[in-house]
Image 1 (cartoon, one colour):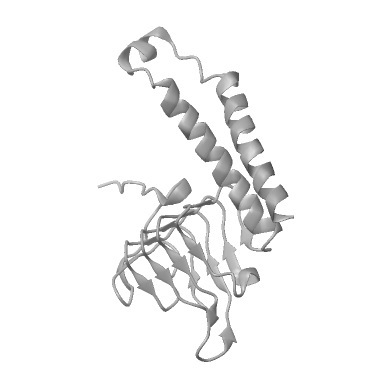
Image 2 (cartoon, helix red, strand yellow):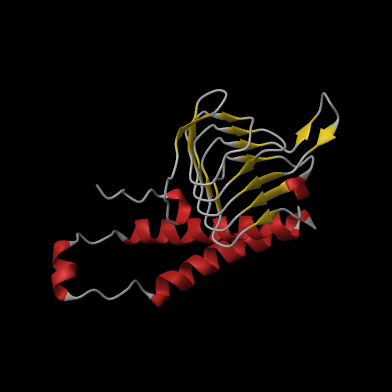
Length: 183
């Protein structure tokens, strides 16, 4: 069963990337094309294959492990999602979990499983740890190497060990990209 799934993922990754590449990149006007250096074919192919692999991996987490990952959510290939209680992971739409981050849903010492909820349009920084039972609101940024042990209100930036609120009333777009404040 697992071998078949791996073969399917490999097949779809290459096929989807190739189809996306053959469909072509958007046609630019001459002025735009002249001002932008051409993207090498290898780079475009790599990006298409990566997008396909990330998409198939999200489906794998949703269908096989029954995790609740929203549309457009990106989980880095080196991020760790707790598979002891996989149904306890709930991540909103267009959220990114970057490399080395860990999302834990169980406490082995106390023998407790707790759900983790991460909202829409959030950014979870590199090597961050989200502990069991935490809820992170929409439009939040968790800085790199932060340990989130308490709930984070919507529109907050947290940093540190333990993570503390550094900034509030934060606005983000897809994948937790910050929107500049007007002066």
